[in-house]
Structures are given as C-alpha cells and as structure tokens.
Image (tube, rainbow, N blue to C red; front, top):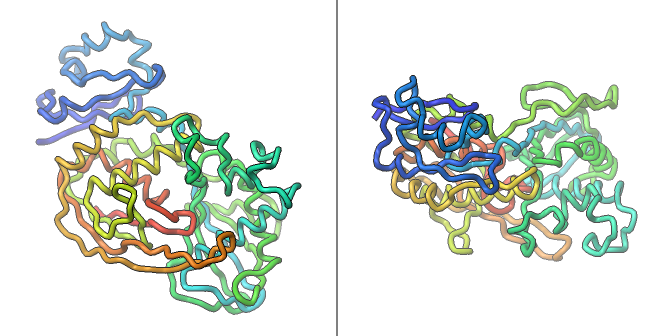
Length: 390
C-alpha cells in the first residue's frame, strides 16, 4: 500500500492514496494537544485530503479553533515542548593522561565532583536534606530532586538525568601533552540553560586532573554538532546555546516517510529490561517499550509537560507490524568503580547489529530521537548508544 502524509500543523497522519484507512490504521488514535490530557478521536475519512469530504465531521465536532491546535501523530502530545541539544567538548592534555577503556564513567564522575565543588554551599549535608535542593543546579543535574518529578514518578528514586555523555569510541588509553580527547554531551530540557555552569565545571575538572595519575587538561573549546564554536579558551566567552532539537522536529515529512527496513547498530552496551530484569535478547516491542519509557520520563521530568502517548496501542502495533529478520547481537561486559557504594559495578549490555522489517514509519521519529538520547540503563556513562541505517 502506498502511503503519503497529510499535513496538519506540521504533524502528519498517514492515509492511503484512495483516501481510506486500512483495518489497522482505523484503530490509530490521535490527540488534539491543548485539550486536558489530550482528546482521543478515531481517524476517519473526514480527514481526507484535497477536499474530499472536506473534513466535515471533524470540523463540525471541534470547529476551526480545535483543528488549528497541533495534531500529534499517535497521541504524542507534548513532544513539541521536549528539547535537547548536542555539544562536543575538546579536552587538551596538559600532562600525560592515563584513562580506562570505557571513559564515560570517569568523565561523569569528574564532571559531577567539579560541579558540586563550585556550587555546593552545604557540603556536609546530603542533597536530599539541603534546603536549597529545589533550586540547586548540581542537585537538578545529578540528584534529580523529587520536585523535578512528574506526578507519576514522585515515588520513584531512579529518575533519568538530564544529560548523556558520549565518550570517544576508541581504544586509546594514554594521551600525551597536546593531544585531544573529544567527547559528546547531550543536554536535555532545562539542563540546556545550565550550559555555562557545565563549561565552568569542566574547566575546574581539568585543573583538578583526571585518571589514575590525575593528569591535568584544558578545555580548549566546545562546539555544536554542526561545528559552530560556542566556547573557546582564548576568549573564555560563551556564545549562545547552539542548535536545539525539539521533539516535533522528528515528526516531519522526511522522517515519517514510508520505511520498510531498518538496521540498528548498538555501539555501546545497551542495558534493556523485560519485566524488571536485564535481557540479553531483543525484539522490536522490547526495543520500543524501553525507548518510549525513556523518552516519556525525560519529557515529563525535564520538559514542560508529559507526553500523551497511547502506549498500549503503539506497542501492540510494534508487535504486529514489525519483525526481526537478522540478529547479530552479543553481550559485552564492562565495570565501573562507584565511590558512593565503594564497590565495582557491572555495566554490561547488548551490542552489535539487529535488523527489523515491516511497517516502521510511525516508529521512526522515536528511534531517531533515541540516537541522541540513548536507551536503557547507564546512559549518563554512554551506554545504549546506537546508530540507524536504512
């Protein structure tokens, strides 16, 4: 069946060329953003293009004002408010640096320690008991105070943090003076506004040193993913926030184009769960369930509003419409040392390639967001990074 997008306020609903919805598509709900909790409406021929039917049933039910509200594909209300940005940090070695193979944990630990040192006014108190935790930048980024949680997560302590560190995918362990260590940092939601604090913390981190021998480094520059320099040490100035991605950007016509096959390459261990337990196996519903959970939590906790997604319907279609045609996945272990728990912790997960075939189009926006946001547990260290190949 050939499908084409019908544009409604920058979001798209798929229908066939005969202006009819097939038996599966007829079950697809969508929501009108702006109505409390989203307003479910069944897709019918009243949304046909080129004036056929003129959308009379829809118009008469909700009026022009209702139609002009953003219509989100598959109930993803709130995705237009969800934002994130990607940056490259260039660390230039001053001393010889000796680092572990997986550098994400080392970068995350030094970042957090430096940020706390420059911001914390009550170092002998835990963040949980501190009277400033609701307004503290460190507490928001690293401790996720309960005030940042949405209504559904208030009783949950394991909340997602508003950043992802992508360490370099190289096996290099030693950096000589003058050599660069480059890593990516994705900031999510309100954390983007704290970029100046984060840049300053990496300056302090460099002065304190990194790795076994506490080798010093200098933060040479910070760029956007397009290469725009927003900080350099020569001027010591910060020029804006660069390009910010909004969730709605991923629901455009190109991303919603008909997709029948996609390969997912897991570049770092992905720690995915099924029924609360880590799984060494993967199918498409499991992938989408873990990805939707992460995106939804990030949007609710670190964005302006929660997403209104019909998860059950979307996951039912993931199981019905998409199949695994190749799996070359394996399990790869690595460990990190936790100062807080004074123990080594296993951080292994699945890596490798898996290929899916079927009606993938409606899932592509979420999958493409996941390339930035990662998936599974341990994303702050760089776990769960993947690349899509169509």
